Length: 126
Image (tube, rainbow, N blue to C red):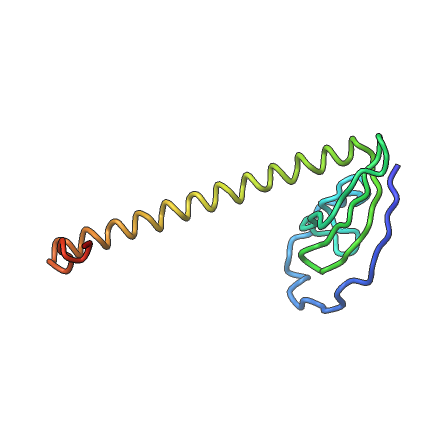
């Protein structure tokens, strides 16, 4: 059982929307990451709390169109949403790690070049 309440979305129209590939048609009441307004999968929880032993209330926001909605969902739907959010967070964490390694490698290369050209000496670290 899902209860959903939509709030007024951002009415700005992206002129490139027609160029964007269409998302799968997923029921936003069962797939909470899917926006009920624009259909993109950029929905994230803003607030949540248990309603009772079998349901959760959530305030959701779409990062693509700024639509806010409140939903009351079963534990099963909430658990599936939590797993999807965890999966997406893992993707972001791996990207951050990759960028961090790249940044550190560039800093090491810069330090090596500075040492080779005599631009850095022990006094710089005192």
